[in-house]
Image (cartoon, rainbow, N blue to C red):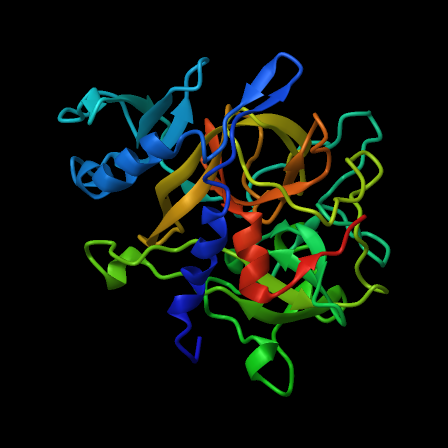
Length: 359
């Protein structure tokens, strides 16, 4: 990239602080716990995260969750078990260690699943007639493949939303916002799925939030918030709903993540899947291959295996029930065999001054 914009990744933090006074929500017999209710545990987590991350190279993150009664718990994520030196309590708050494996960006690899919940046998890796749906294979021509998360708009133009590592080739691509001749192409499907430029172009890279890697700062002192990019497109080339076996059109109104919230997504590799947010306010170290590691703060964690896999990067994660159906909550970009990591969607949209072009 030809220009410094490192401040872009920290500006969206302001929007994440607006919900600190919100109490727990009730949905049937399921309680969800918001940032406001867990603020005491979050304060402890933020105070001690730097020291916890230095305990061992196997500590890959921290986050906050809640027990059944709503008491906050500080989570310490480790790549493997038996990491000594982690306390069981900090300032009266319980600390729990969870082994989740290494966290990596979920770029395309392996064979995709059939996708969807209703047996329509849609293949999200295939080439779709234009306008293409969201949730399917896409990418910069020089990367493998990721997922179109959503169609977004600035009120005049429409853009395809995905990750930096899907559309901007880890900061290396040319964005149209700086080039009067236009940015690099983005394609559907991605190169890994036999897409090519210009035959499969659906737009051009417009802007991205640069990722700052720990190698530039050995103490990992620069914190990222988003791994995101937008590509200038059109309503002729890009639709705003998932394929027929997905959840349909996302809402334009977003929601804030809460512990225990039910969510779903549609992605290039695993199609439509459902899960729960297991933790919020996560600080995580994410590997991008080639020894590149980036630290992200204020992230969202979806627990359990099977929610995502390589190639699902860029998927939009939306609410699943209790009045939150199809409301965007996060942008999927990384994970392991047991968790999925999301950027908070409001931080992503604020960075590009766009909204979800939904229903």
